Image 1 (cartoon, rainbow, N blue to C red):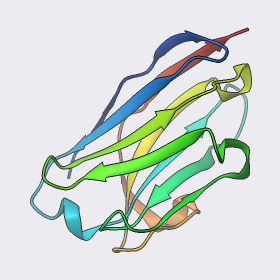
Image 2: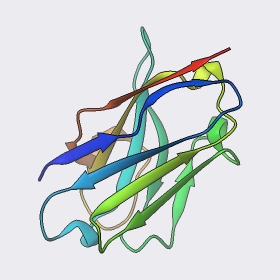
Image 3: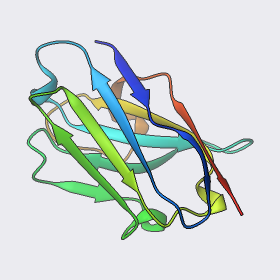
Length: 123
């Protein structure tokens, strides 16, 4: 399984970005997916997750109401729409595949990781 994240970049505070994570393999639709981020000098933290069908999602408190996770199983892709971005959202964002069909908020429950895409929000 390979995960390829894209869509990061430099944006001003208040702006928007949409991250994409394309997955290889035929079983993408069977697994939950998550987005995590790691800012310089900080631990990796949970951002958002979605179950296999897209019917259930969860978000970190700091991004609720601003970020939306979604997936297109026909395209083997999961998305993270990020609106009202803040400088504190600056980080490397990585997508990951969960060990099962549901989602998890802890990184230990994810077994495949993408390489990450850098999001920089200027003030």
